Image (cartoon, rainbow, N blue to C red; front, side, top):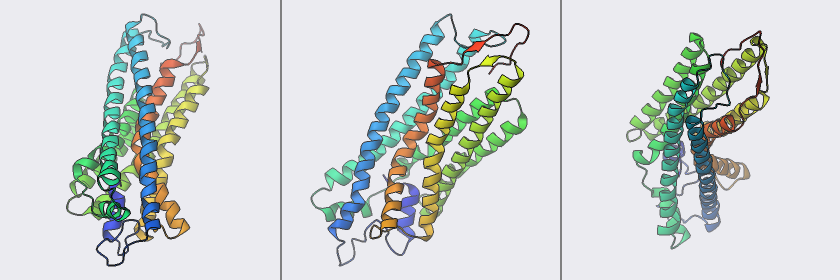
Length: 325
């Protein structure tokens, strides 16, 4: 399903970039219609596969967390040795992962409804499909899950950094970024019916702030791990954990940044499938619009899977006690 930014671009540009003006007396070429429709179908297939992988990962994380909660032995060694405190902290984290999964599945459901309407209910001819693509109805309810996803993901990162870092400046910066992301998303939804162009710009800005939040939180987590391993005089095998955190950040931030750049460029240079550059930008936008919600959920869940499945191994030093990570 097209994002708000995509809808706004095609609504306010004088030239319809990849939606067709079916009210014109000249019908668009069938080849252009196929070039426009193919990415929607292909991206839906990829999104369904990613949602399946995401669901399997989440089930594995929940099962392993439940096993750790009911076990008397923990793999993570802390200076306080408070096992009950560790297990209690996992419960809200798992609940947040489940909420993020529900939002992602809701996004997938909305995309599925749109794709079914486009390729099944309007499949009598390419021109009918192009008409459905041009005049399809877009309700605020269909866009709401894609706006909530970045907010929940940012909140999860902010909470994780809050648990690791005691600096009020770090927490203040993350809280401001989280508040900005939530405010931009809320304003984008509020203006959706009245001014869809401004709504699209606000939603794109929200995704950009979410990418900045991810990069900053990743730096904070990695730097915290570095400080703990340096000050505690213990031998930690945290290299794998750092790799996982960085990879998950790239999984989120790279598609978000690329999508935001393409969205901002498209405000001034409309996309058209008649040129190679326009076709490439259009396909990138379509794929990213459909899979970014799933990637926002997969990344933190994948980190949780690796943390509970392969926790850092620690060799205790009797003369020095490390800080809890």
